[in-house]
Image 1 (cartoon, chains in turn purple, cyan):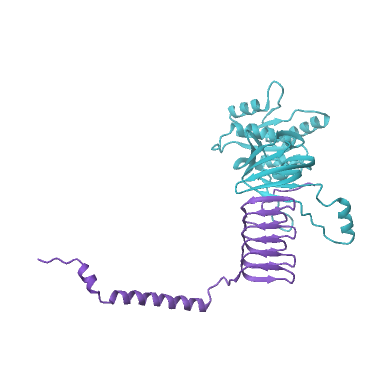
Image 2 (tube, each protein chain N blue to C red):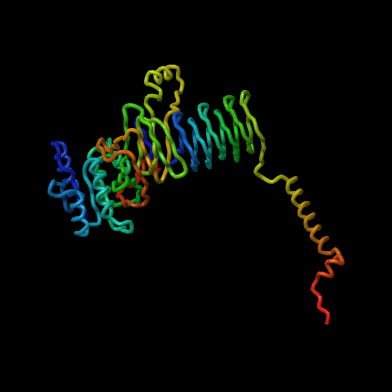
Length: 155
Length: 256
């Protein structure tokens, strides 16, 4: 088979008979058919196929899981767990699809990517409270002990 | 002025190719000094003579294997800071030549015209320690599956393979023919108009890699053995100033 591997935009493919240890990082797509013990990080999409097993965190833009994952998954845009997918670990994504038959055991956080109005309001309230507490502490009269400990010279 | 290093003639076909080449070069007005390696004068010595004489363009004419030997010789003499030296190639068999694809030519006439127009691009080359450069893909082939270990900064991979192809940009592709779908299976799937995926193809990218195998495998470049595993390879960027073909503008006005 004549392979033309000179296209650097092709991304990374981990074959079904491959065992990889370490951090697999690529700016392009990553497709995993084999076993990865470590991180899988991509700026684009990650596909964990049915025959794949990943033990470690996965971080990508769009992640599709059809195989086994033991570790956290963070998808900036979309995470889809296929009917053959098995995930043990926390997941975080803006859009989440778990198909019928998929197995998932862990914590789930959905993110919007943008700050909601509710979150903004909460932040403002907290900031006001912090400022008020600080002002209150400064304006409180000092106790007798604090006065005696302050620097004071008697002539 | 051009310094042409022709591959030694092996048969009548080679001789007629070189005679035709010399006519084209003269017609295009890019004639220069022409030399041929002999047992008395090796490629290294001829390259050294050309550089000593002050030629800034060295052109190799012949097979891809010869071109890669010339490349190793030239880059061995050329320092990294030296922007003067430019290399050109005239592939003998452009239809099957990987170098013809790199310099974007389809025949000898086009290759000579690219020398005349002198469009120069910097190109990456592969470097096999301790001292071999390559611009054509190298391959490791075994009839039976062989256990290999590939170390790329950041991770290590273990697998059994029958074939590995590494290009000068260090894209590594490997497969195990015994696990890949057979031709019969592919045919049956095609009868039912179904796509049969090959899950045993692996592709990696790297700047540097170390490849080990058990047992040791030969490394082929154009059917000639140039090294053996264990192998350490790195990509050398912008090391080669290469004369390439101009972009073609088709009838539709779009640039190819």
